[in-house]
Length: 405
Ligand code: PLP
Image (cartoon, rainbow, N blue to C red; front, side):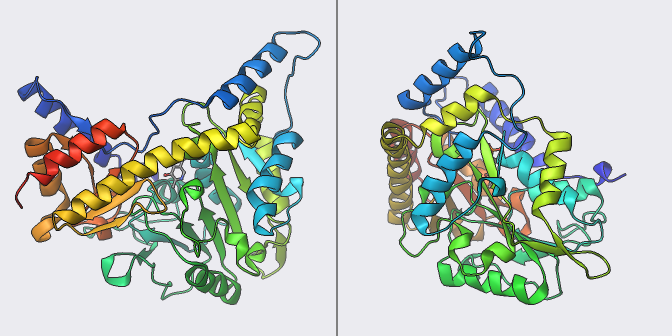
């Protein structure tokens, strides 16, 4: 019954249907896809070398590795702590870092450790995994005509409130936040994020902080980890991924931080440590990311690795800059794209998201993603991504710049 309530797979299916129909009717058109949230550049040499060496180890009886720790290898957890946390003054123990094969699975699976009666808040628009996994678990009713599931709290984020999600009006137990945000590409400053940490402390809520796009942060006042906010270890779980940071979308490696200080509460109000619960979940249902993949992820932290992945991020961010500037020049309102590979474009003349999608497809042969697919507050917006070649990005912007709205 819960799975039958799900609605949202419509978005990418419908985008693909319209694209196919357009290509059928216009076989010679050079369609540029700017809707995809997948990287386009290959793994960097430092990563490939480490990956190859680890495969060679697997081929030798002396160095072969079987099952590894379900929580991930210590060598990778230590590299993560040193490079992603200590740099920002955050100390963690390796037992607080859980390595996995993706932030999608982790952000999707995490809700299993919480009670079915917990009240959940998500931002609107949203990365739909947070919503759908709670629908699957049975924490919601049906989706209403307004595009919202009964029983979920939606925290609106749009141009009117500067994409700073509203605090929940009714008490909630769990808040999903994603910054830099997918789909809007916007960020929160330390002070803005602190408001949520303070709310969570006051209301005994837990923040599930997805920071899959951390590597794209370029603004000084944007925190790289929620744990930069004082007291956040008591109320937040953080999700990170090598997917967008280092092109691991097809290689698969991510991690989740569950601090020892983080507490939840039983129905009777008894305080419970969350870290052992996630450990129990992972050791029961997960057998670890593969050894070569974890060695490849470790290599992203070597001196060469850091230099090489930084160059790739800079390449994408040059595309993002071109998109932002070109669209701003023709009078469109654009958001994001500064500390994120996503650019969130306000449709001209209050057009709806799908009408704008159709104009870009039919008249510029450019494919975006209609904002309405990410939640009701995404209506009137369209998402473009910087994951493309520089040449395609320039060509797409040239074509859009010639349109008249
Ligand atoms: N979280 C967000 C916000 C994402 O946009 C994505 C991928 O698009 C993921 C998580 C998935 O990451 P992974 O490839 O590690 O599963």
